[in-house]
Image (cartoon, rainbow, N blue to C red; front, side, top):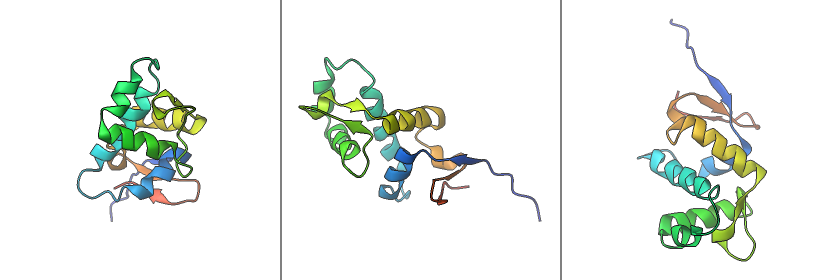
Amino acid sequence: MKPCNRIVVPLPKGIARIAPFCCGCGNPEIFWGVILDVLEEYTRECQGRHDAIYQNPAWYFAANFLDSDTIELIEHGSNIAGAWLTEDGDEALAFLRTWGADWKSKAVFVDSDGVHHGDL
């Protein structure tokens, strides 16, 4: 039997909280791509972000999802377009920038509970 060489990577808390909401069938890269795009948007200057968030239904939904008490990757004051990344949001963005929207196909990721995520 040939040995299996697998990369095992710790999964950030924020990504681990989102992962159960994406079953992985079809094209999960679309789901993770939207998450990455929205997190990226919150690193830009606040001015002009209103249109980007409110005029794209997928981004508007994702922003509210990321702000939810379950996920907590962004926080906001008076409106969702003016939100900012939390510490877990910064960590999730760094992870997605490094591994990309197709991260599950690149390694075995293990969350803090020992649950494996990924396709390898």
